[in-house]
Image (cartoon, rainbow, N blue to C red; front, side, top):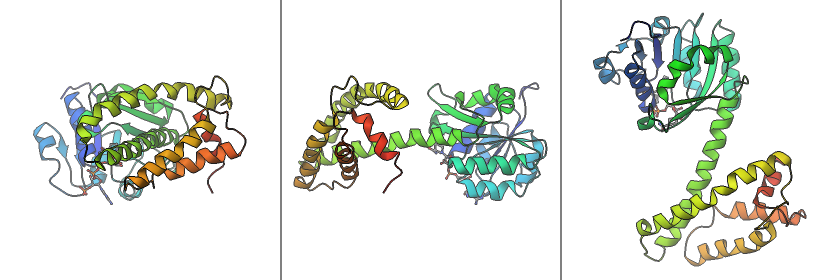
Length: 291
Ligand code: FVH
């Protein structure tokens, strides 16, 4: 351990907590770890970590406390057993913006500072260049510990509102799950004729990568609230063509249940008189708040 490196505590040694603790150890930080069930810290202890028996002891060991548990309730339950006074709590557990704001209030009410975080990586990526972590809440805490948090990958501070890291996190995950839905549908269609999904995969990758160009242009049109300028593939055309996706799924014995709601939203925007919009126009339907 390097003497001048800040000590860090990690609460939670699931797959992600172990990866975080491991990255801190690799960066030379004296690292104290705790997990509800014993036995998950053995390799970390071999690498130099100190494992303690209670969350309260772990929180006393370091000013900087990283929390990575299953969910928001487990975080509240565990932190309630500790004394947080003078601590900087960084919660990297996935949660909602409302939970991030509630936890910030709860933690700061206990004489501690707070950062909420959203990890945009899976455990093997931690410490690698592809990983990045979003932070929101105390700017002072972020500035003080940015170099420590850099052990996990890139760090991005997204605002003082403690709910913002979760908001960005969930927005990114929403984009990811939308992609998963489309990929699942595409493979199901290919498999319905006994064709090779593995051979189809490069074609799907090429197509999806080509389509990513629309992300930046759609973002710009969302900010302006204008969706009908410079449109090359208008919504009326897309909505009319969308029935082919539903009909083909049904004909091939594949469920259209993931795609059908998107077809409804496209049709609603067209019915609202915005058939000349680009696909970004669907955001205006979504922003009405659901049916
Ligand atoms: N793994 C991933 O790919 C994703 C990447 C993005 C961020 N997520 C979030 O990270 C949080 C932890 O995920 P994880 O992968 O470490 O999850 P598990 O391996 O299942 O470990 C869960 C840990 O939480 C502990 N725990 C659960 N319930 C409680 C409780 N009531 N009180 C105290 N601790 C609790 C559990 O302890 P144990 O079961 O070993 O005793 C583990 O330490 C999560 O928010 C992801 O969404 C990961």
